[in-house]
Image (cartoon, rainbow, N blue to C red; front, side, top):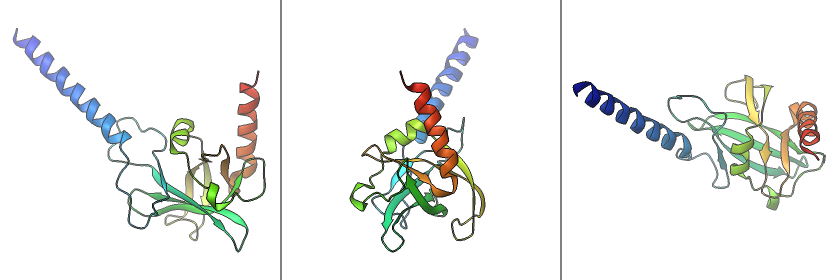
Length: 164
């Protein structure tokens, strides 16, 4: 009888832990003050039994002077993970500012990331960083310019695999 009580208590404790961990992982962290309200939260690749919140706040804008789209990935602590030029999938022209609305639901489902080498002008921690493809509400996909060829090939292959 005593063993059954122990098993029930341990099982209930584990269930509470799992529910709490799921809630913690699925709840976006507080937006750092340096991150604009237009930024969307991307949870990033799942970390099994991860401690603390992770992911990035992502915002994009049209750089009128250079005629390119730029996006910034900011960590939950406010440091810049990566900021650089992004180009639309299969179009080498910038997306208008009014259409740079990020679809974080699709991003979190797709979880499509690429590794690139960031300079000190692009990241608070230069070196190898993982950046995600950015899915917009209009259906467009923004790709970091540094991995454009690799990413378009992967997207082309995925589309070929899923076409009837």
